[in-house]
Every structure is written in structure tokens, then in C-alpha cells.
Image (cartoon, rainbow, N blue to C red; front, side, top):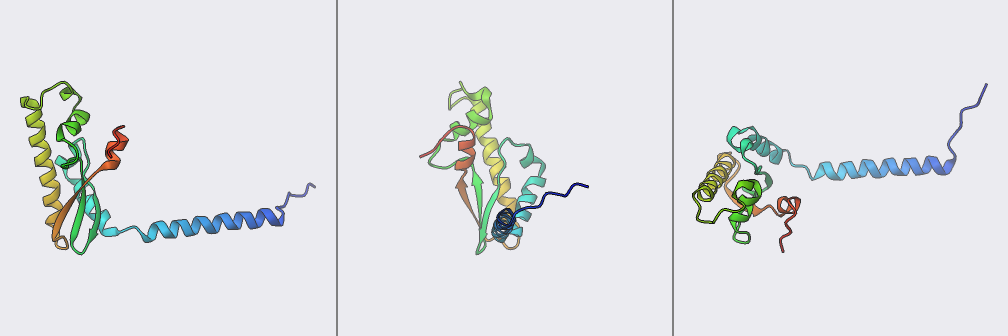
Length: 144
């Protein structure tokens, strides 16, 4: 009968240490998780018009009634940059082209809808839009 190999004391302590670090990491992550933000994002995700749009608006925070929502547009980044990323057919179009203007109007409509859905919630007093730098980076465009 062969004897099962046993772990030495160092290996046991090492594994217990890793387990403690993993549990502490999970607890730290969970403590920063806000269920209300998850609920607000679920509202946005459930909306057919918003979920069909190439950019997904997300609630980033909710503090003192102010909901911060991600946005692909701001004064820092011309809207045409965003439109040319999500609508490749517009890459060679002029800023004044009808299709570009229509795409910009659609963005305004969709973003307004996202803001209204969030602001209609009882605990939300106002909306603050925040440029989604992470999204641009995921598209290979790094903003200063």
C-alpha cells in the first residue's frame, strides 16, 4: 500500500496565505460594489433602444443623488471621432454630410434617453456625464 504524499509545513502555510489574500481581495472588491449602481445599469441594459446602440451607457457612481454616467462625447473629443469609430461607413464622410448629421442626432437621442431613464429614478436628483476614456482606449485611441 502506497502512502499519500503529504504537504510540508511551508507549503501548507503558503497555501493558507494565498487563501487569506484571495478572501481579503474578494471582500475588498465586494465592499466597493454598489447594488444601486447595478440596478441602474440593469435599467439601461433592459432598454431595447439603448441596447441596440453601438455604445453602452453605464452608471459609474451615485453619490448624494448625482448619477455619473459614461459618455462617448465631451468638449475634449469631437463627436465625429466617436461616430467614425462606431459607424465605419462614416470614416470618409464630411462633418457636414447628411449621414453624419443623422448619426449625431441619433447619438443625442440615445444619450438623452439614457439620462432620462436614470433621472426618472426617485433617488436620482441630477446627472453628470463623464467622458468614457476607457472605451476610447479599448478602441486604440488614447486621450491626453
